[in-house]
Figure (cartoon, rainbow, N blue to C red):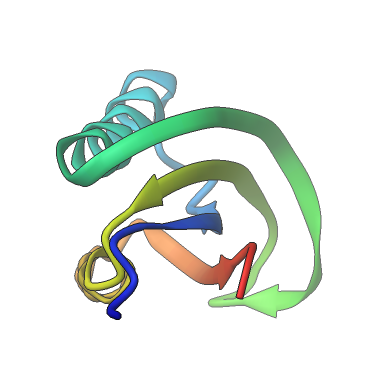
Length: 98
């Protein structure tokens, strides 16, 4: 039988040069996308942190960890949307349960 829903975590790093309103709007947009296809458990904004290595000559990034449950097809769509958004520097989506 096919899996109906799964639990996932996404950690993404935003460009720290964005303003507070733009950052909040982008975090809210990704949260709304996840809520539209499932349920969001938690959005933990870690804020600006030093990167392990420079990305596009930037030493800092704005980190956000979101925990959600959705159908198995949604994480691929979320990953696609994050890859085409120029404000998202890096992202990773992990299935919490196998």
